[in-house]
Image 1 (tube, rainbow over the protein chains, first blue to last red):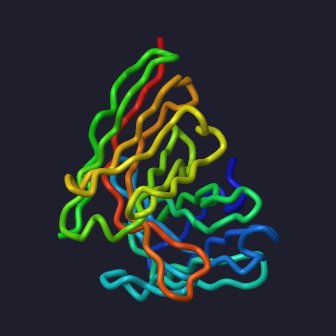
Image 2: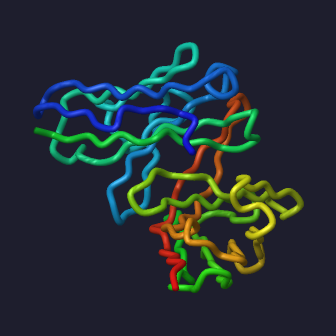
Length: 111
Length: 123
């Protein structure tokens, strides 16, 4: 059971901006635990997109950005491209569960 | 190139056992925590277990405690997941992942991930 809630799906036309929210609670994001984001294409290895709330690993386009505030975090994709169609997951740590937690996942569709 | 390659996934009956392996290359395996993460069909990602560099600390999600054991062999650059008393709800693609952290982060992250190995528990 995921303790981080994401919208099931978001969509946008090529070139548009979309955002994905990740809502947690006082035992995870609200407790100050950092948030990370992954891109996952079915049948492939998940790929790290954003680490420690807003940092991009080398090779990740600057079209991807992350932020965190209070009990929530967000991933923004600007200049949406067809190759961005994938599932996206946030991840943090939960002190009540004493373990890592993932978001429910969001499917991004490029119209 | 940093690489993780899982193997060992199979079809197994409920109550059966299976051992997954993950071969690491391209980095100093013994210097990192490692984890297993799974994805059930049509579901999201779920962290399963992680293990410290020297194997002295291990942590598990409640759903697998007492049935699944994570281990590693640093001499072979390999990570393992021994799965016993398997249930239908253990059916998933299992990924191994390297755990990363910096000096100030409050929550480690996973990078890279392997391509996964499928475990199907069914009679």
